[in-house]
Image (tube, rainbow, N blue to C red; front, side, top):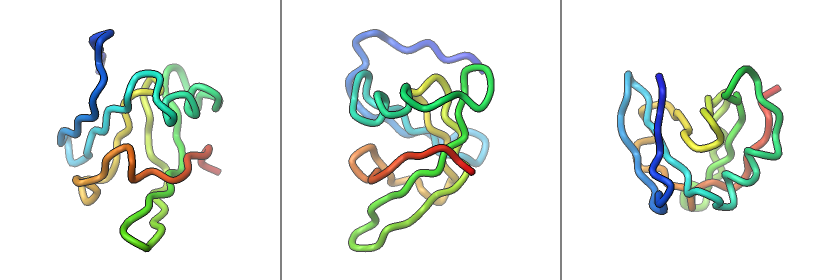
Length: 93
């Protein structure tokens, strides 16, 4: 899959693709900058653990694939997640 993003991309968007939710991070946003600091797991992608704030409960979504530090593929059950729900991103162990 190849994704071309408009350089004026500013907002968040989620789409369902092949049983996964696609969350597009804001260009130059806090979490994109964090992902750029982390090493790649392979050519152009990262496998990370994301901790979400779900109301008062912290939920850890493990082994999430990120492409180009912009597109996060979450399990389909996380369809209402947006960038502001993310609390922490770290490399998957």
